[in-house]
Amino acid sequence: MRIIVTAAAAAALLAAAPAAAKEMHCNVDRDIAGQIDGKVVKHHGTTYRLKVKDKFKGTPDGVSTRDYNRFVNVKFGTEKSPLHDPNINARVRPRRGDECLNRIEAIHPDQVVPLWEGAHCNTKQHKKAEAVWLVPIGEPIFWGVGAARTTTKVSHFATLYVKQDDGYHLSGACVENR
Image (tube, rainbow, N blue to C red; front, side, top):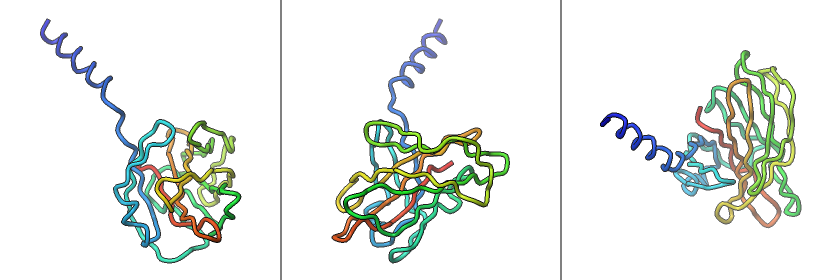
């Protein structure tokens, strides 16, 4: 009887505990690294904890999530986006030959929007998807969040932009630590 009560109490505690934050590993502009490292952001019901893994300087033509995730590589390009159009293109590819990319989604603050569906198994070429919205996470930093579904995993990703007078400047890329 004692074992049953203990097991039931443990199950109740687990059910009541909040879900753990998704740890996101990031490659960011060194000028914002201090504002990003350790930052916790809640977005569309999910909590994300950002961790800076690498830093760069300046405004690059593109930023990738490197090898922070075993299932997908995500890349963002176009160093500026006009102020009136905060939609960012994401490029995603599977990292392993036994994992095909099946879906790319944008995770907006109030909804999840499918951007692409199919079967993309090429580990060398990224699949382009559009319309990841930018939303503020602490002025002047904005981010766009998405998810990439492969054969066996769902990996969340994000891009970071800094808003300046002439537009949004690419300032980082993050992917779920998997």
